[in-house]
Length: 273
Image (spheres, one colour):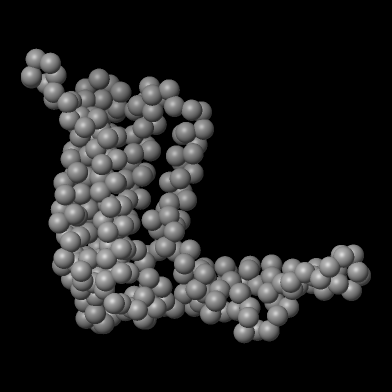
């Protein structure tokens, strides 16, 4: 990541390697938290304070309980240093691009402010390891706020990196595939939408408008499957009787009944962190 020239004077940074190291460190934290929480915490994952208040567990549930809380703060401290070094190295790169007239001073000013904002969000996330989640009117809001700030910071990071890569010509100089830039734009939009769904709200998932739409689509699709199955059975166009679709079974077995559908919607919110 950090290389010194042969004469011992100049030091060069590979910005993408710094970012990769920071992301690997973060996912190491998540993996460590998952193992320690699921194997040694003794916590019922269906009865956590997050489930009771928000209706589902987001990824920060693995940062909340001992013994994960005894290990993760140290790992986060190392990861935070890597990520801050990455943001600093990227800022130095943008500063050099301004001097080389590859980046306009106005865009440089905007991107600099975004980098400061992103660094602030990363620093604020440290609070999640210091405040344990309790009741909603006590410390849960303080505990979940850093998680929300991290999500917003990561969206800002994705946007600023994409804008910088395109406007500075940096991505073009790398001879990337033709699909890379459209794919990056699509990723930013998709990531922002996912984060909007993942921001905690003290409402059970089935009461959220997005959840109602999600469940409604699934129930209509399931109903269409039931009609098709009943028609095929009536007309005798199939040689053997398949298992009936979900809605053709008893309501208690329905995969798309309101509680089960809501659980599936909540599960989707934890994907693509």
